Amino acid sequence: MDTTVQNILVIGSGAMGRQIGMAAAVAGFSTTVRDVDSDAVAAAEADMRRWIDGRVTKARLTAEQAADAWERIAFTTDLAGPASTADLVIEAATERLEIKRAIFAELDSLAPAHAILATNSSTLGSSTVADATGRPDQVCNMHFFNPALVMRAVEIVRNDQTSSETVDTVTEVARAMGKAPVLLNQEIPGFIANRLMGAVRDEALALLADGVSSLEDIDTAAKDALGHPMGPFELMDLVGLDVSYLIRQATYEQTGDPQDLPHPLLAEKFEAGDFGRKSGRGWYDYE
Ligand code: 3HC
Image: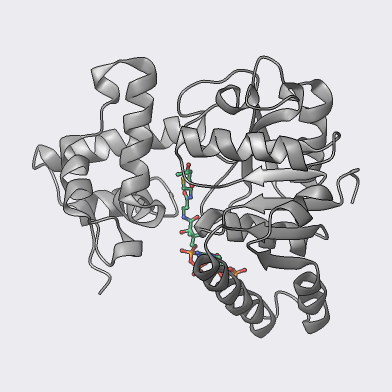
């Protein structure tokens, strides 16, 4: 690996955190995935065990590569231990500012002075947490995509104080993970990919609301006319309608532009608790 980073700590063991950690371990980094909730830690570990066993079954990894990767990853509720040796921390906790600020303040007191503190947030620019630390130049966004073990892009977003060294190091780490870094030189709501995805989604929701077509046919058009891997409704179900809704709500809070409000059809699903695959029902039924 062409990087000075050896030890990575991922905060949060949800759908994103566990896969970011596993991708780092497969790439050769010594990785810890940490969560406050021991049940969540156990669920993440079991899920990633199934994933890595599946890699061997599918002959994507040899048994030896899988065993080595598994050796390099730990799942834990402990924070102080893994933080004390981390070169890079990637925070993938709940999208709530006060929680993230508390995490960054704690990490700042526990992690070595050289460690970079990155956030996987898709809605909060790192400037909102950088000033909770004494190292704002070593703070940035490192935004991965779902499923993080598969999607190659990582948006690296610098805030006003992020140093060039920090950007260079996280770019090297992303490359060492086999990812395709995308650099944003300023924080903008939605970054790049969610803005592009949002534009397609808005059109899809408008077509559905206007009764032009069924959601299945709109998805078919996206896939079979445009070559998208998933239709916009399937994608919302994968990402989570709650996540899609909250991203939009957060964007609106930043811009104040009513056009950025979540579409009423999306709001309806959100309020009904139909979050997509994770809840068994979203635009499609998974039960
Ligand atoms: N976890 C891990 N690996 C997965 C996976 C998952 N949830 N789902 C699929 N995969 C792997 C499979 O194991 C398979 O790997 P292999 O080819 O090496 O064996 C590979 O992905 C392809 O899977 P499938 O053949 O089962 O299915 P598809 O070819 O339909 O691919 C997909 C599935 C990769 C999810 C593809 O449909 C896709 O790219 N969809 C679009 C996803 C997307 O746009 N993500 C971005 C969302 S936006 C976001 O995350 C931002 C955030 O801020 C909200």
